[in-house]
Length: 240
Ligand code: SAM
Image (cartoon, rainbow, N blue to C red; front, top):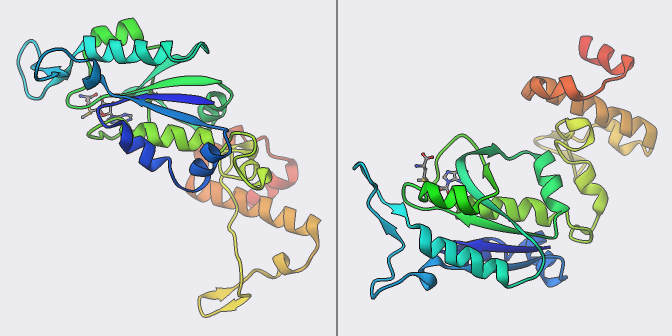
């Protein structure tokens, strides 16, 4: 997968993507990242990329032309078609289902705003989709872009050492939250590892994990249960 980042601080996203699974995905050739700075496409001695908003008010707005030129340069750098995704608090809220779909794409261009955002005409003419990483406002789209890069990179085949681990994560199997996890030592001043996990009985362990995932989901995110497709036994677990 190839991801082009349009940003005044493209190295910020590259830094975030340099570690752990995402860094490894790049080393393994599963992910190629490239940054494009609209300032490199701005005109004049000052290479302006922003200006005051028409109608008055605080802050600055990113200019159409440098952004459009950067997007077009990114598009032209590779023959694979790419949708332009603007990271915006006004976009579709990012979910694991959307991440799964994005992860199947060969290429995408992520557009990061700054200041009050970008001129609406750039969005209307160049942007295909808008994505939000939550109902709060960041000072720039770079962290949001890094979130998208991380979430899709770990789903690339071969990125995780154990592909099974992604399948067991929260929001994956039936959309439930993940079960609790334990490791050594068995006894610790903070508590014991649940006995069933030491039993070696894989069927019992799977049952316990499923039950824990259900109970945890009900406690923390009951909104996710409706889509989970529970068996009669699982409904009884929750009723108990
Ligand atoms: N005036 C804009 C609004 O209220 O919708 C907010 C602009 S924000 C200060 C600057 C940039 O940060 C945005 O253009 C966008 O790229 C990014 N951004 C801020 N919050 C975000 C979020 N929740 N998800 C994705 N991107 C976000």
